[in-house]
View 1: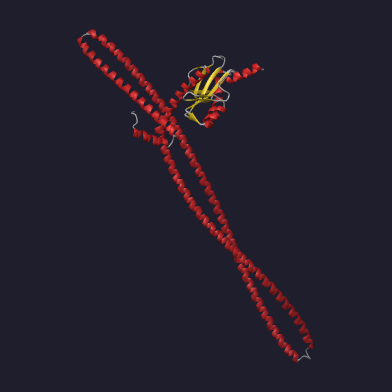
View 2 (view 1 turned 90 degrees about the vertical axis):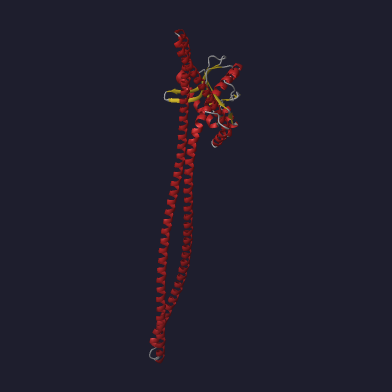
Length: 460
């Protein structure tokens, strides 16, 4: 693998900027350069090994020629062959170590693929939520269709009532026609009465009794006419009320028609919004597909780089934390390394785990437990805090419960935001930076709180 050219570095930088911050991109490019230098060094070593093998072949050829000259040079040739054999054994050992490193990189690549699968699952979950939202929208459309159906039924009932009103109006007109006919008959009867009155005047003397009866009948007729007039007035009032009711009905029908029109317009707008929603969902699906492909490509390009940076970061953490506790507290610190703690049915992975000894308190069993991140966040600090009780449970299981045991939580990073530093400080954790600076927790350095408690007790 050769060192990247300036154009290749700019292309890779543009790709990484889409995913990471500028500082992270710079760190990744530096790690890639270191990887290229290591590969170049390994290639140089391989070329050197080939040269050694070529020299050995030439030596063998010389040995064959010397065998023709005499038996005395055979011992010297055998010695050189043994030296070459030793070099080949060392070369094979280096090849085996390189194979082991390759397998470790493949394992880290599998972890990166697992994270990609998890990201894909999250994307599918978001699509499922979109489908649920679509289902809810369809339910709302169904309820809207039911409301429209009910409005349609109400419209049909209104039209039926209007039809009944029209039928009542028709019957009322028929009744008025019959009243008009009865009025005509009454007028005709009055005309006949007038004729009878004329004839009665001629026969007045003879028909006084008949006139008296006729007068009484006339009175009754006038009374009936008065009643008819009163009925006619009430009928006119009823007709006026019916006309008002008809006007109100027509007004309500007009309002219903207006509501029907607005409802149809709203349905049309909803249909347009649904079409736009479906179009946006299609665009979103295409975007998700492109994002999945970009993530796959990015995983292939960045997977190895992230593993290399993680390994370099942990190597720096082991050295810096060892130096801080040795320099600042005078402790003796054993080897610090990544640990996989297993007990019962539990499994816990810890970035930094190792034993430390305080010469001033040799009875104490001290364990350094650390979290390593390039740019540590508040959530990562919380997750690290959740691991500490599990580490204590593991130590109790493996080494038994012990009162004089101290777990020292340490966070290592290149940088941390002010709120993250405050979080680490308030939780009593210790923060170590890559350049060797340490910020002790709010209770001070480890064992310091025990010193203060002992001094207060002695003072009392």
